[in-house]
Length: 508
Image (cartoon, rainbow, N blue to C red; front, side):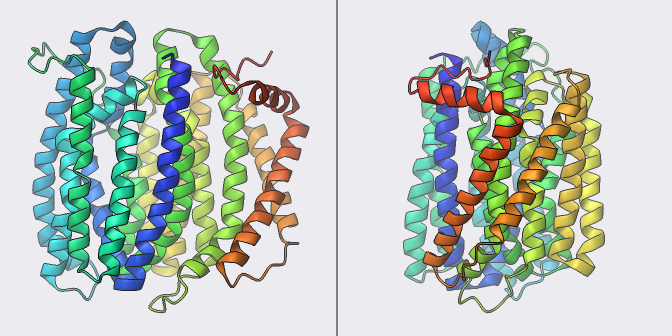
């Protein structure tokens, strides 16, 4: 299977998985809210986020491991592949051991720092149960996942994820409806997710001739520590908001945050899924020194993503508050209707979505060390601004901190690529942003003419359909006016290709 078909398959399976993740992600939290209340939902979210900080110990090695695998996979150098995977396996098992120490520390500290009405043993037992799947991820799964992603067969692991996700949602829903203790529900979920490392190990052992007894002469993973700062920034960006709210606000605010976060992060995850194969796709081009093809394909995907992101997040911003109102109907222990927070969080995740192809190029080229200082600035900005504003503005304050941090680093990546890997004027990006702003402004203007009172699921669906049509029409018209050549070329390609070779950037 060539790399173009692998890119298509990876993207398709990832999109299916993320669609199911979004759907299942709405089902279970709603059941938690209705059966256990906002505080339990906030506690589960908070514990999961605090456990997520263990990924700081990964030091960014994952991205570097994947980059290091591109060339030996392209050259079919099995010995070098084995050395890299073995080195990564040893590293991740050390993280698994460190996780045990970290969980013990959380058992002592977390119940004291979280503002909740739950007793100590309830919090501790829930924390220990939720940590099971995280431990297995580092002890078994991570090196194999990185190998499959680098070899452009990440769709195999995604298929395993789909099976466990659907099964877990079904069985957890039944257990919640039957009224079982939330700890039993989470324990069963942890057992279900053990299917992932088991299935992954089975596939790798059957399809790769890895020599896990090979001798390591020196460190096979070059730039092993250069991804550290990049990784810290990513973890801080993803975990800071909930951590700040846990420390300086309430678990009910954590629950409110999570409801909005599910929506915007769901859209972001779909975009990530659709572009999940780009890093390994471009990494293969970079390893083979196909710079002309690399730049041409980047130009195409940049345009496409700007158009898609503008469409999706404009619709999200317009529909998120009516959706949350319906989703939390009947939940009276917290006020979930906060429009300003919803808009700011939507803007934040539109910004981080826009930078996906830029960061993918940086990782594909292995430019971790060169861009690590910007990651540090992003992390510091997020922490300082969020903590400074949370006392006065609560949820809106942490969203502003996230937005400013994301905006800074997205701008930095555009500048860095223009001066280094892609070597093109920044004006190209500015033009795309101006088109995005024009599209957004016209969409808000024309959508305001839609007068539909949302008081049921049916009325929200009708509003959503009308909004999708209006915003979609504006996106198409604006792009046809300002990007006519690429729009027409894309149309011709889509018309021809049921059997695509996936080279839409060749627009001549």
